[in-house]
Image 1 (cartoon, helix red, strand yellow):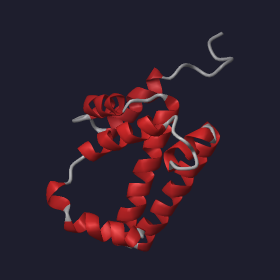
Image 2 (spheres, one colour; image 1 turned 180 degrees about the vertical axis):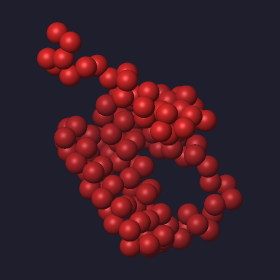
Image 3 (cartoon, rainbow, N blue to C red; image 1 turned 90 degrees about the vertical axis):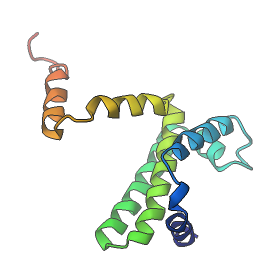
Length: 131
């Protein structure tokens, strides 16, 4: 099924854009209180944060495996799974995609090295230091 979804996505790229992520977020949010017996999103969310995070991690590993194997068609499908499960994680955590998009825009044009260095200096000192 994932292979077929990957092929279908590759064929219909002309109309594809990142807005699908915002729409998916709205769908997952709307399913938050749905019946877990009929909604996969509701089932995941009903199992709690640890299970949602575990499922995201499993999908991320599957994505990495396909990337290392050089299987781009399977990587496309697994990437879609990762994005879906990341959105479920955001819904569970109360994070809105617009917050993530704003953070990405804030970082846009900044060197990755410089951005990482700024995060390091912004972190609070570990307990016991400076007390």
